[in-house]
Image (cartoon, rainbow, N blue to C red):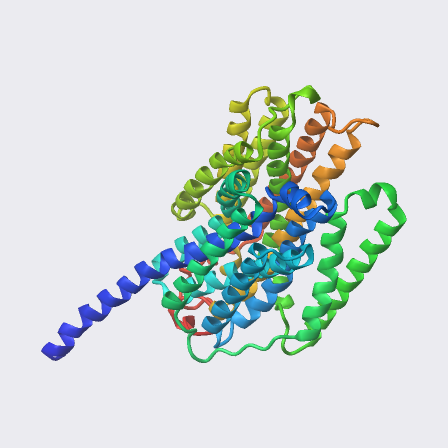
Length: 494
C-alpha cells in the first residue's frame, strides 16, 4: 500500500462514518414527520365538522382516508423501494405529501381537504423505505438499532403531533394546525433531497397494478367497516355483506400474488413461520394497543357530568400522550441492547404482556389523572419495545433487497389492526351507552379494557409459540454470511 493509499483509507472511512451520522437523524426525522402528519386528523375532527359544517361522521373521514391511502400506498412503495429508483420514489412521495399538506391549508371546499388528507396519508408508506435505506447503507452494528428506532418513532409520532395540532387549532384555528403539517413536510422533503442515497446496483422492481387495485378495494371495505361503527348496530346484514366482499377481494388478491411473476408482496415469504407469526402478533397486538390508546384519550375528555372522566380540553388531553411518547422512545433505545441477550419473539411476548398490564391498570385504577398518566406510560413502554423488536423478527429471514417490501406488508397489517382496535372500542362503548344518554357507562370502559387484556394475552401466546419455532441461527441483521439475504455477502441484493 502506498503512502497516498494509506492516507486516503482513513479519510474514506471517516467520510462514511460522517455520512452515517447524518443519515440516521434524517431517516428518523422523515419517519416521525409522516407519522405525525397522518395523525393530524385525530384531534381536529371536531374543528373540521364546525369549520366545514359537516357531520362528525363525515369529519371522521379526514382520519380514515389518510389511513386508507397509507395502507394502499405502503405495499406499492415497498415494492418500488426494492428497486433501483428508491431515492426518486422517496422524493416523489414526499412531494405528494407536501402538495396534500398545501391543500389542507388553502381555503378550499371539504372535498379538497379529503384529497389533501389522502395525499398526506401516502407518506405512511415511507417508513418501510427508511428501514430499507438503513439496512443498505449503515454499518451492520448500527442498522439494527436504527431500524428499531424508525419503527418506534413511526408510532410515537401520533403522540408528538396530537398536542401540537390541538394547541394550534385552539389558538390559531384549523388552518394553523394543518399549516404545521405543511411546514414539517416541506422540511422533510429538503432533508430527503440532501441525505437520501441511491439504491445499490443490481436491483429491479415491478409493480403489479391489478394487484394493487384489488388490494385497495379490499382495504377500503375493511377500513369502511371499521370507521362506520353504526353500520353493525343498525344495518347488520349490510355490514356482513360488505365484510364478505372484503374477504373475497383479499382472497383474490392473495391468489393473484401467488400466480404473478411480479407480486406486490412476496406472499410466499410472508408464509414463512417467523414472518407469519410476527404479522399475526402485529395484527392482534396492534388492535389491542390502539384500543387502549383511544380508551384513555376518550376517558380523559369525558366531562364530569357523565359521572366519571376529567373533562380535559383537546390540547390538555393531548398532553396525556407525552408519557406514551417519552417512554416509547426510551423503550426503543433500550430494546436493541436487550435484543443481544433475549430473542426477538420473546421480546414481543414480554412487550405484549407489558401492554396487557397497562390494560389491567386502566381497568382497575382510573379515579385520578395520575393513574391515567401511569397507564399511558406503561402502554408507551410496551408499544415502544414491541415496535422495536418487530423488525428484527421479520428481517432475520428476509433478503436485504426485500427489506422495504417485507416491512411494508407488516405496516399494512398494523394499519388494519389499529382500525380494528378503534372499531372494537367504539362498539363496546356504544353497547354500554344507555338510550338517551350521550356518554357510555363507566363499566363499558372496564369491559373494553378486559377485551384488550384478552387481545394482548393472545399476542403473548402467539409470540411465545413463534419463539419455540424459531431457529437459533436466525439472528436479525447480523446473521452469519451463510444465511440467505443477511450478512455482508447480500448487502447489495438477494
